[in-house]
Image (cartoon, rainbow, N blue to C red; front, side, top):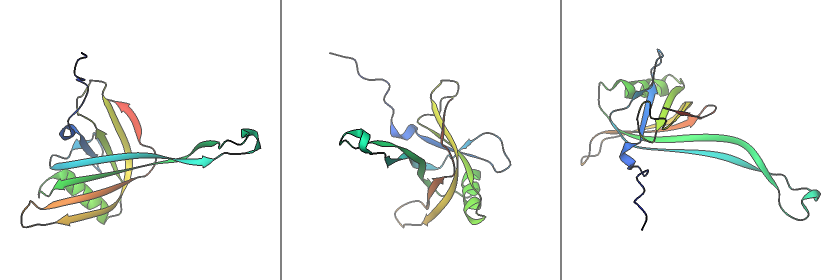
Length: 145
């Protein structure tokens, strides 16, 4: 019997950090509840007569998106950065982590994004929240912590 895979990570370890408009390093959004990110590559039809009746493909443009859900907390400077960015139509620089573990060599994904939507909610049965859609504005760069 093989050992349990200890490389698996719980979802709650994922983090998003926002780089302040003034510059510096990404600061984690402490009130984040959920984060998802996706990288896509378009597929181009490269079929021609040389493929002998088989379809051929090649990569086209790549893109990335991220969605994040936050508990709204007045005074959270990262939420204020995000809110200001959408109202002032400014891109934000973000860092996405499977787990924050500085110096570990674990992956970190960094890039600039346009905030295409921010949805504020105030349900009676829950905390006030803010859901954000980030659309990549250029490359999402894979690096190491």
